[in-house]
Length: 482
Image 1 (tube, rainbow, N blue to C red):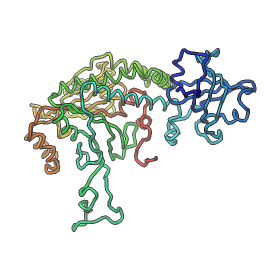
Image 2: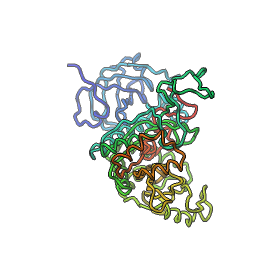
Image 3: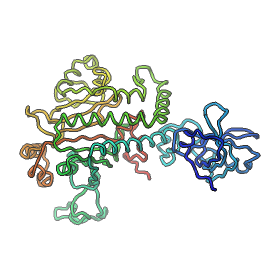
Image 4: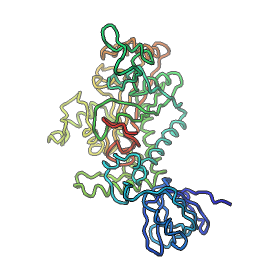
């Protein structure tokens, strides 16, 4: 009977030794001598390798010569308890086949330390490194946890459009979608491009958010969430920005701002606990990588918590809820502000808070995650509910250690007259949003929602410092490889 392939992750959990197994994977390292070869094999199912012991008397020299770092191999042999340090078991190979060679003179991922900058240039191969395989397995785990959380709470997963005719944020930094001839587009009488001749008969773009369409779903289905790609045409080359990223956006009917905050806190605690409970090996590897990286930094620049401590910090602490007004006073009177240590000084009410301010509140002042609420209306979007003071809106942001804002949300403006006034104030054409206003004309209800940038979450749970390293194929200005 033919031996069936077993994944490395399954073999490493096995307690049944002295049986024949078949494993297939890629060679991480090979060492040895003319008497014996030790081959570390990884198949992507776990951060850990399994050791294959190949006896030159069993496996031909011609075959072993082709077993180099990066080559793919198929090994049949006996799973035995290991005598060596570092592993509980190993495979004593009886058959070894090289499925695909990797020329050591050309294969760029030789067993040495590679910079992240170098690995971004070969994003098609970087999943084979330990760091990036760990990141992508965790990305999968976090995606699954998102769906599981909302499914358990009875939410409906709604697919909102990627091609859209609306700009949810009013930002104007959108990618245009068109089939018109770039060299010879049809023109109107005044010389502008005639988008009525385009595929959709109007000007269209890639979405910046599924929120507005999500609201339509919530005002019919009750509780919905979206989880999909969003796009921003910002010419921003920073460690925190991508042109294409994934967003999780729940929208809930009959939720006021406090309900929204409750759900967001529960959601983030759930995700942090899921990572701790289900990604132990990858978290341990990424934590050790981070500790090793920080050894060379001055003590003042090192993270105050390890990676797993940060996740535990989120799980164990109730989030502090602070109004924007109170937060500004705390910041204005803080030592860093008075001693002009902040890059962006906090002058007073109306200040648009920066990451350094958010981190101060979380890491220094409260020492727990923070939810800020009731922001000035002038720094927030048109759809956020006006408070009775006529100065603030029912917005909320959640702040995490090491990262600052991770969630942004609000109670939505359900009153037709107030919403129309805000749109006029912010120069948003009413005729283009008539479909959105219909939800306020017919059976409007209080409702709320929030957005979580998935890559921002991934930075937090992996400890990586650059957003380009937590998505397989980053889209940034000047870069659309693959």
